[in-house]
Length: 193
View: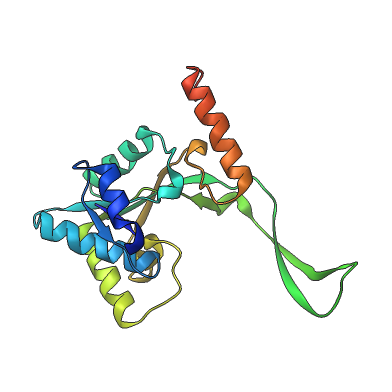
């Protein structure tokens, strides 16, 4: 199931053919996932688990999908692929009277990165967990940047499996350049793992 903006429905269907069902997404990520979930359940009422994946992470290696589905198969109700945070993380506050030359934020503390992880997709869920999470979101919306946040909100145990640096989210021009280099490596047969 692929959710796309309504303006791209026809071109997505032409591109994907019968490889996937294409549905109109919503105004935001949560609405798009909900639309795809409803369509998937209509298509196969017996599905037990779903994966939610961002098209912006188009270079995600198959083994990440396997780790997520294996964890679901082993009984996890919600699963996310993660990578350790390698940068130092600082907490800041915005200054009321900023000095442009000196910056408009002040460091107020450090965050221990040992327990921090960068989350990727695909995120996997037992269908009933994702349904329950989206039902609560419809009744009492919060700002959510992924579906795991919605499952966490309900108190569900979200398990973490190893992600992969190649599953980068292509958001900025630099990300596109990195993706191009990864594709060049793959085409040349030099995938670095």
